[in-house]
Length: 639
Ligand SMILES: *[C@@H]1O[C@H](CO)[C@@H](O)[C@H](O)[C@H]1NC(C)=O
Ligand SMILES: *[C@@H]1O[C@H](CO)[C@@H](O)[C@H](O)[C@H]1NC(C)=O
Ligand SMILES: *[C@@H]1O[C@H](CO)[C@@H](O)[C@H](O)[C@H]1NC(C)=O
Ligand SMILES: *[C@@H]1O[C@H](CO)[C@@H](O)[C@H](O)[C@H]1NC(C)=O
Ligand SMILES: *[C@@H]1O[C@H](CO)[C@@H](O)[C@H](O)[C@H]1NC(C)=O
Ligand SMILES: *[C@@H]1O[C@H](CO)[C@@H](O)[C@H](O)[C@H]1NC(C)=O
Image 1 (cartoon, rainbow, N blue to C red):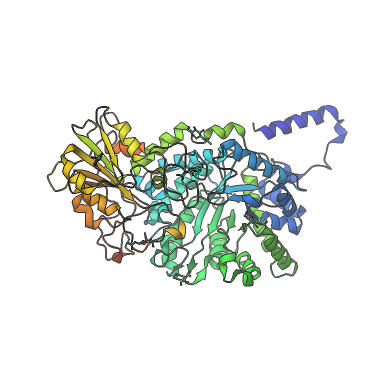
Image 2: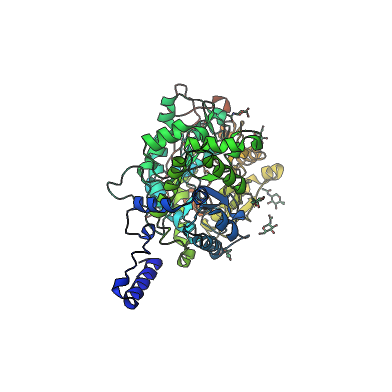
């Protein structure tokens, strides 16, 4: 029994005991508050009681920084979010997060109709804004695992870590089909292959929201209880298909190819009861998705039968045209007409509310459209049980960074690593697995060997992420993992940037070297990159070390990078993607406690001139094809 239903029961008993039966409270009966009523009837009843201002409040999502109790009450705010890195306090604990959400929720419950807010956050690889949360590999690494059950378990763990902070809603999963790795969000995509993205979409949605019951009607949102969260499939649609991978740019495709390549994962999400869908900043054939009525209303809502709510991306209404202030009023109209239900405003709520109220009063926006939007938002809130259980559960704070989540993340890391080369030439003994007991020293080198922030990538602690070991209190770097894995008599020496002459002189002191290089953290447009080279001094470190010592190179990156010119120097090459906090998973496979099993979720190109180049293309001359991945055997008794 939930706490609030226990309270209802106690209240009911008291009433039954103290009141004569003739005073049955029929007059005070409020249908929408009755959890025994069908959800659609609760929605209709509540909607019928709402003023226009209360309705538009539901359609408004504002930033945490603005969400004082006064603002929530005055504007009947329907939703609050944390933007990337927006936290209640530096290194806030789970209970500090819960207290913040509780305060906001209590303000919402004090309003005339007592409609709870829905608090959302980008929990895109674990509850990644939160200090000491478990950070899972980014989606590209999960695509490499080819393990949908694992991804479902990660969804469950992420839901628990979000609920630990009192948050019932995540802006995940990203179901983009990234067709060009030059895109700064490519690591948020499971794969270039639509079918693989579909497989992972079904799993992650089920993990986050729970399993839809048998015969669940397609399109109806579903969230299975107070330890699950509402999800958000994003970014609808074609975000991963933009010209040259330029973020938020134009996806030039005919309707057939849009439906064939980019739409199918949304169908999976809708079948699994996804609660919300976020619209893409990008355009389709020159029309911004946020104003595309054909795709949002006619296709997603009417054809695909999506019954949850559609939300904008951050400030997307502002960005629909430039200059913003000239067109904001009209942009609101365009987006609401297109079928947007909730607007991630997130800062200028007075202007947004005033403009939208005015347009409905003047008839520029029909009340039926507003009613549709609000019904969808309320449907999700009722489905989630927010009316019955609006407040965070303090018993769940212990879920943040829990040991079983960290073990799961470590398992995900070892399954995500893709072995691309093992042995310099045919017939030569493969370098991996590395011996734990080395006769000589082990050298660990490179910018990514001892850097948790770079290992986690963007969307960690802050929006862009940050390099260094300061962004979380718990985690294991690759260097630390190696030190833990080797025999206690094996000496591990670390030099981020070994001196070439020194190394050449002392080369035979080393049995082997592990070189970890890759990309610095980035998110969204800041990650767009037309050259995809390994930033300096990565290539020099590879050449200097691998030129004189047997080496395995780990590429820590959100996507394939240019490695073609250096592959001949390497004895072994591993794509490590962005593994997150649990670096021990890297050592698990390097030293053979577990075998390598990961398969490329993307085509590894030779040079950027070939891009875009995807599996199934007529011209396909990759360095390593989609699906490639060497295997090694696990030590006896493991795997
Ligand atoms: C909302 O918060 C932002 C960031 O703190 C601030 O710049 C903005 O002025 C606030 N908006 C309003 C309407 O107060
Ligand atoms: C695409 O990017 C180009 C180059 O930055 C820009 O000029 C153009 O406006 C963008 N198109 C869209 C639809 O965003
Ligand atoms: C690490 O974080 C603390 C605050 O949490 C900050 O004061 C300090 O400057 C940071 N150190 C580095 C090297 O970024
Ligand atoms: C983060 O974890 C570290 C290591 O367990 C612990 O010492 C620290 O108190 C934690 N910080 C927070 C804010 O939870
Ligand atoms: C280089 O030389 C110094 C001092 O002789 C030594 O401490 C260091 O570990 C050497 N190795 C590398 C790889 O730089
Ligand atoms: C590659 O592109 C990135 C992102 O635009 C840029 O920062 C970097 O300097 C470029 N590198 C080279 C070698 O051109």
